[in-house]
Image (cartoon, rainbow over all chains, first blue to last red; front, top):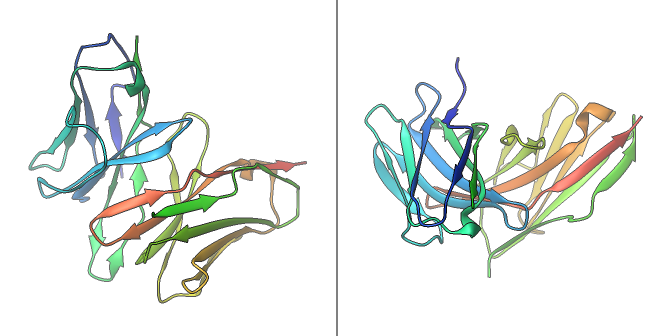
Length: 115
Length: 111
């Protein structure tokens, strides 16, 4: 079974630009979550999608947005990039079972550097 | 306010000993608690999940306990090895399809 695939692995952007990151979850996993990880803040929850619907959103400005497609693939977009957006962006997917939720499978992340 | 606390200081132990990591939380009523391992530059790897009605769960050399009265989880690695050196994260899943992670504890196992 292929893992969670995130593209690209590394990205360098200039302040003010926008960026789109992509995530392909494990086949059969319909829940996809996004996290931002920085040395000072740890893993911060961005949003969670299930069956193309955003079910929850973290405390991030409106510049951060996402979507999920019918094949469960997800994208997140950051507009008007700021230096503070430099971080490792992680996507995670999981299956949701009747007996309770399961752990997440994370991708390797996209390392975004804003200069 | 809601908070998850893990030991911010690194834990150094000798190979073969048991490592015990702590996760405390306040103002949450988590349905599930999870533990992950993360190596530098990589995404976290899921280790164990324990539900609110479970007291203990084991997997090979790993053991997790969950005390909802103390609002605490303990994560044990028995017979630790240098390869166990990593950062370990606890995560709480509350209602609302949102999982919150602690800052993690770095573990160093010396040969």
